[in-house]
Length: 274
Image 1 (cartoon, helix red, strand yellow):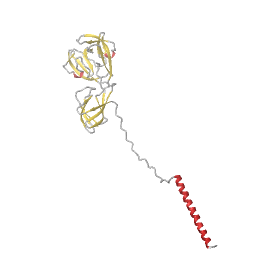
Image 2 (tube, rainbow, N blue to C red):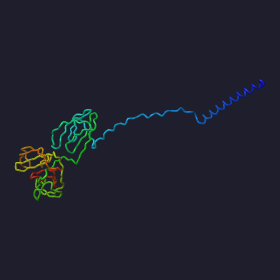
Image 3 (cartoon, one colour):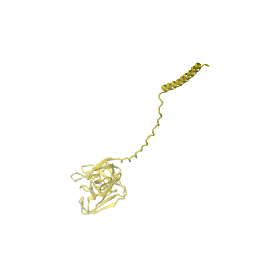
Image 4 (tube, rainbow, N blue to C red):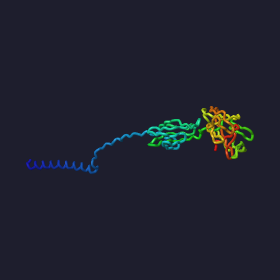
């Protein structure tokens, strides 16, 4: 073989190899254009754990009351406000109403009561104010009525207070103080706890009465305001004591007329129903 032929064969081999290599490169570039550039794989970040806040206990139901030092709501007089508590005086209305305030310290969530119908719950303290919820339970009225079997004067004689019904006739006193017949417009029957106490008043002329401490007399006083020697319905008081009450209810009536007065065990009394 001539030298020139060998050279031609070598050059042809080189050209063939180069063509193959260029073809492969072109094929790869074509794939990249079709599928797009290869993306660098990325990792999905793990979610950051979050803490679930502890829910606050629900505020007690009732009317919201905001008090400052020196203000009073129901039986509670607020005296001092601190960052974590309040201080004040509680004037009980039941079982014995009193003008003496008893020291009370309250923290958030604690309750003060008048002893029967009203409860105040401290729910928040902020700066110079204390926030309460006031709950009034009308199913627990403070008993201020007459003892069972108290006799009410009627045109037909004395009838036990618990037996009277709306529409019955009783004696009342008009604005001139005259004894006149009246119709019972309303009756009341109030449940009492086993700890209930009543005032027992005995008069010099022999009449006596058992009634709750806040039951009104015809002259505007209440049973717990009466003392030995006072005059009640024209006779001096010879005995004035607070005694346990064995009944389950106390009772009252509202007669028609100008005054609402009636005679209970022969003593002229006012009503709690007006």
